[in-house]
Image (cartoon, rainbow, N blue to C red):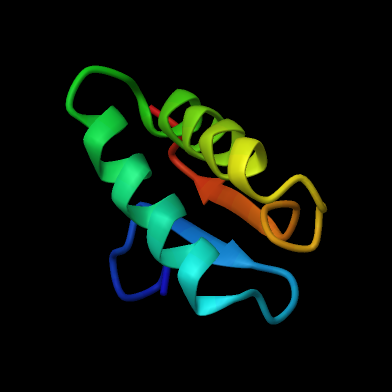
Length: 68
């Protein structure tokens, strides 16, 4: 992906629930309007953590590349 020109990748380390992933991605893009990518992902993870406290739902996500 980086070779093709992508600057940042948000990925998961293991299979995650579709519902919790949808919530996370929706929150990520809502937060990205006013924050950088790293802060947006952190806030989105905290939002999912409120609803699904087990780390299996939110702990798999990571950001690689340009975090701004």
